[in-house]
Image (cartoon, rainbow, N blue to C red; front, side, top):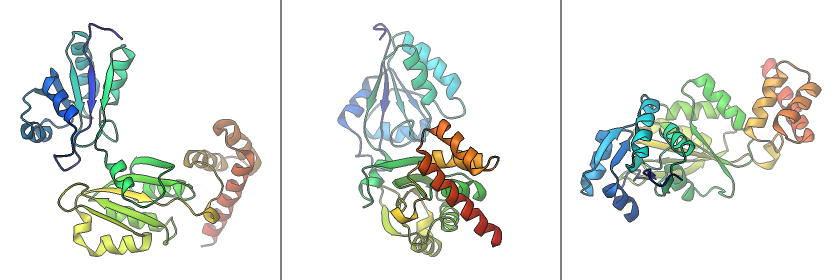
Length: 290
């Protein structure tokens, strides 16, 4: 590391309850030269609560390339910078990746201050398997893209998680219901750590009814956790990405050619890919009949 340079601190902040911040995070925010925040107005509520008066500058998805370059120069000059998002851990479905990448590539130290993260908080209280899980970020915005998104994960064997907005949560569950079995277990976690925190574990069919009939279940910020496919429902022990590659190849190639190419591209087992290809073909035939 370049010793005369400053240091970048990646600081997790509360996802709702202002008490969910570490002592170390508060002390770091007090002593850095600059705080780079996704929304300067939003973060000032937290800073005022803890009596922190450091200068705050904006770094969000629309300016982060330029702002990151500016911050890199400040770090090179010896200033220390704390990166925060609106809530939770920066870079987890939040801005900050260009800055961290630039700073590390420049040989300047990046120090993480762990803390709140909505997906981990939800997973810890979900009651679904946690030994292996996949975080998928935000679900796509359009219905067609969401259905493809859910279809690619329908046979995934492990727990998977995505974020959703209050404006699309019902439509998202309805699209999921057209792709996944109605009895698949899901956990809806909303407004985590806040006054109206709600965490329910129910079937997908029940989740659709609950969100449709309860206006409160269409308010707030959502983490949706989905049970992995039961063993008998798995096309094969392949990942969502491996299945996606296979589906693309099957649109242009025979089954044998698609499987052979998918083995080369993804490294998955030939037998597993072949079983998945047969299942995809069978599903297509059934859809064509319908």
